[in-house]
Image (cartoon, rainbow, N blue to C red; front, side, top):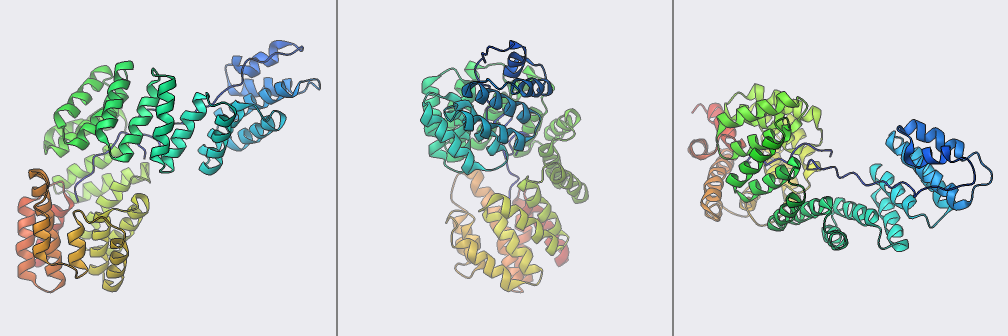
Length: 460
């Protein structure tokens, strides 16, 4: 189970430094026969949200406001409450705006954004659909709908919206970045990089774009180009912690551990709350075989980012090393909820259950996972544990792919086949497999630490 390549710190799984918050829209300039002071302040002239709320509230005291103007005031009042973080009051005012003027496009856009922030993506999508029905030219509605579609897994729909948004405005950096995220979700890293190339041309001083592109180069195994992007991001902003963190991750992948330590240390010096940097430093402690310090880092990463699935996976491995199988199982169940379908989580959960005295549950859960799983590696390991294959088939399957993949899969095969021999009471064969895994696995792999733990338990 190799340590995953992590994206920079952002809200949610996100996953990247540019703000993907759904966009808000103020109503167009307000005009009225009454004194313009409150209307101007309500329309955006106020320096603070509280002042805008006060101005909009006073503007609504007039009994002679036309319906369209009243709707605009309610819309702007909603925007002010949204800036204050009160989504319920914001939505109430957008409701009133739409009630006063069902054709006010911005109110639908803003209500959709607020509903999306509350997690009601179905309702948000309906509002963006309605805004686009009223005005197919609405850039904010289209861009917001793309983000909702992407969040709901409708990647093709998101790309369709972003294609149209880019056709209408080829200079909007955000649209290229969002489409890059969509291509990444679709698994087309080359197209994602092409969009980030375009975004970087439009905004060459944006260090966050370089970090995002660096992550994608990492996914391609092009570490030279990823490090070049992180270097340039740091040149542009030497205090940008995610660039150091991601370069740390790349050094980890390259097994350049001294450089990785230096970059993770700098990332946490700049931002002690950067969960991904704590995770990466935990992996470095695993490499150093200081599992107590590794767990401290994984604990901190989880405290800072409870949705950071890799930290649960890695901490579960540490529990497994110490024969704390119930704790390992709990972390793996949490990781499974966050990740959905992850074969390594399923395999380690099976091992924790089986070693923890629950072999029937282990087989049942792994069988359920296998029913909808891919047949690619490490599927042959699952087949072995379920009695559908043999050790030879596992090692044969591990020989597929490029040289790096073959080496990693052979190391994993040794560990997992060793566990299979151990389950069957074949301790001598298990020990030989664990020795092979210990010798061939990268030190950052969970299988390396697992082999070390099993060798110790077997007295090897």
